[in-house]
Length: 304
Image 1 (spheres, rainbow, N blue to C red):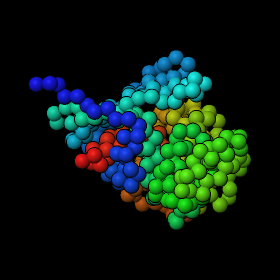
Image 2 (image 1 turned 45 degrees about the horizontal axis):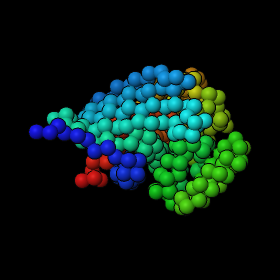
Image 3 (image 1 turned 90 degrees about the vertical axis):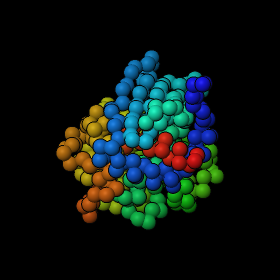
């Protein structure tokens, strides 16, 4: 009998199995499973690669499936004309261990991360949502534009970069997104209800006083030495981290500001817990393999 083999999906095929509506719903259910201890997802193992690159190993198991995401992040690839991230997410049946499929790793990362942002916006941001500011113009910004267009079509989205030319080029490349995209450089428009930071900065790109009518979401910084938000908004806001266990080592914004981890709440808390009215809120997304497992569940469900 021939050994089972996994179909290996392209980036486009992976996108087709991860529509943002079903993906957000699956992520919400999976976040509750993770908080209840029904998913095992150890902290990611990080191995060094040359020129500040890293190999990330992220397994997760549940009663239905098991996954292993293996990705390489190589910051110097831009100069080579190559994507920064390469990798795969392998899916297995949890009972038999049989291989099921292989998804494109960067696509899973981009879409499940943007979906986590959408969940945070849905629960923590002022409603109705009309105006978002993105800081950064990389791959994650593209994924967030796609996510916002899927669930909040037509809203205004300002794209901030240090160079207005870079922001303009990004907006031009996403002209058919269905959003009111506007290039920007400099201070955030006071009317922006949500600010999403999507950079790998080692120093804060935003340090304004916290506002109850503005949700801050940090996505890009994923190491203790990185920080997109300064201590002023961090220490003056109610804090949420998608995965507090990983955040203690990776949420540089909170680590550098000296946040009190006893007060930091999880994604599941944001979804179901009581919120303090009239308080500014900051949500930090560091990612974990449980969210990749959620994407795998969504892919299997959509594929049928």
